[in-house]
Picture (cartoon, rainbow, N blue to C red):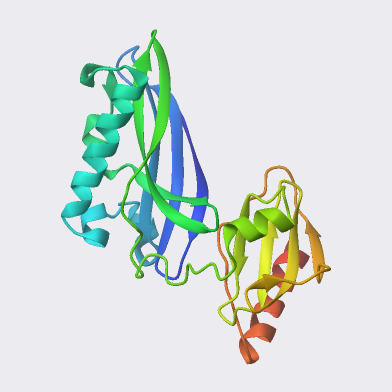
Length: 222
């Protein structure tokens, strides 16, 4: 069969990915299929062994996952017997962006009307700082939406002087003064339909030139 992987988030030490695949078993006619989430340590990506949520957020995180699964099963009106890949259930989690912050989400695979499906659910604990080091939004989400009604995400700089507002078609960069977005955009950057933000890296001093040179070399290599 085939397996596809999509990056949702990259940090200093971990990467959050979606893994989807479908195929048949070598010695039978049965079909296998899955669509799961994984968080992998960057220093051991070759092992493809996902980290457990308890290693990130302690034993209480299991209760948050189990509650999320139960609520999702009730919402979908499915039974435990409908769920697939049960051995991966507690480990199928990743990160998602909502209203300017990173949040944990989980995913279940299940069968309904003889059709493979998957559903995501919220895990009601905050990602720890060792996973997401900087996740502050220094302008209120309400203020951002009032300024840019089409906003779907936003990032603010650690210096609290810049906000990047993501819409479906572009990234709009504004100056910030006293927690308020200034009048005219500093810059607009067009994005393609299939592009998403997976990382925000803030730099000052010599690091700005280092990042600029690295990104320029990547563009030239494309």
